[in-house]
Amino acid sequence: QTTRGMLYPRESETREVRSLDGIWNFVRSDQKNPTQGIRDQWYAEDLSKNQPIIPMPVPASYNDITTDDLRDHVGTVWYDRKFFVPRSWAKEQQRVWLRFGSVHYEAYVWVNGQQAMKHEMGHLPFEAEVTHLLKYGEENRITVMCDNALIQTTVPQGKITEVPNDDGVTIVQSYTFDFFNYAGIHRSVHLYTTPKTFIEEVEIQTKLNDDNSVGYVTYSINVNGSAANEADNNLYARIQLYNKQGVMVANATSDSQLGGTLKVDKVKPWWPYLMDPEPGYLYEMEIKLHAANEELLDVYRLQVGIRQLSWNNAQFLINGKQVYFRGFGRHEDSDIRGKGLDNALMTRDFNLLKWIGANAYRTSHYPYSEESMQFADRHGIMIIDECPSVDTENFSQELLDKHKSSLEQLVHRDRNHASVVMWSIANEPRTRETNAGTYFQFVANYTRSLDKTRPITAAIAQPHTEDKAGNSLDIISFNRYNAWYSNPGRLDMVTQRVIDEASGWYKKYNKPVIMAEYGADTMDGLHMQPAYVWSEEFQSEVFSRHFRAFDVLRRKGWFIGEFVWNFADFKTAQSYTRVGGNKKGVFTRARQPKAAAHLLRKRYFALGREL
Ligand code: GCB
Image (cartoon, rainbow, N blue to C red; front, side):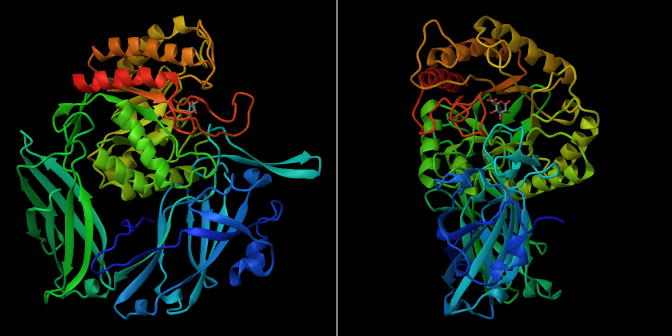
């Protein structure tokens, strides 16, 4: 089963978009009785009819909103709300869609008591047509059941166990990955309209000529709907490309398959931050779908960055120029709202990325919001786009199918973003396990079959000597915590070890190498001289020792990037190694700099100017 449709909801001459964000009603089911809501058909009437309601913001994780033990709830929770659909939407020639930016982990959705859709996997959008389920000019109800349980065949994996406690027994969710399993309706909920015959998919690929003076945008459009199904109806599309000043720079009429190529003379290519005075240059592509009789059926607009990627066994290039990545591993995480989309936070984060001179980040360890991908396009920030597979182990066919599905959904969602320059198919998979080799060969080849224009990586922490996945990758990323998990406190055991390990990976696979994670937990405000673990001095020293290694490695020609772990402090499951969460942030969870941020800023700007 493959994903269809799901273009980001945008208003146009032919489309309306309404937000269903706001305060919803919320109840949780009894942990020991997670299917009770389904059995008792809680979706058939208002949740408030039978039980006390908790007001719950959407979008947000539900975990940190209340003051009771909701944080650690395992299993299903329910949301509902009412909304009106305008009478004017009851048109013969129109469809209405309901779209979720993401719900973690599994979601069932009903509209007016009728099942509308079901989706498994957090961090990815899903939608369904609800035209026939709605009452026009009247009040409607939407109900969502969300299940946060992670087991051995979910992506990511987890374990559920029954454990005795002071009240008898309780259900415990455990997982090995190092971030809190926040859950709920994490991103915006939209209702939107399309015409009956509508633009369902747009796929673009861009290229440049040798001296970057001419750009090419190849597009293919999929249309769905009654007119599209009539064989003798020759639909066509008019495509116009506008620059930032609103001047049309290219236009074309599609071929009968609704595809074609736009040629853009004197093109302004998309460049990463600091590689051009105007990084992240975007054109607007306007697509007008027409019937054979010239009637205008649908209009959709897309932001397009024109750039070309290439790579070989030592380098990664954009528009023919070598790129050195200076970035971060990150999380979508903040106080109170957890993983909920927050425009203020997102905007602050991009301002900090530019302040510190970064040109890239990895969406560790799951797909980030579509809104943030659009921001990255516009700011010239390169994205290593990671699917939600973390600490992958116990390889099974069922897991493989879901893992492939996560990549299929991710590539489908993000393939048109100029900022996306690489796919990451896993974080710290157990690549020395038997079967890891074939498993990752399947995953990598499948990803390549979906997109040949971007290289594939995975962030690996197992020793290169035992790794079985690197053969299937285009670029090797490795994570290592010298002076932290390895030889804690030993600042004298960083530089040479980083050089040796990076060189080991290169020698084994003969592919470009990135250090995708390094760092040290740091309590902001803790100062100790000489440097001691957890102090701000220690984090700065750990960074400096890595910089020495990176400078040696960069001269070798195949070392192409450094990513600090982490951009900001973030919440994790409770453990004695975590003080209020993981504190390896260069910024605090409130997005203020620690001392090491200033050091990193000097380096990132120096690197950015040099190149
Ligand atoms: C890792 C993981 C990351 C953790 C980090 C740490 O290797 O990839 O998710 O947060 O180490 O700080 O332990």
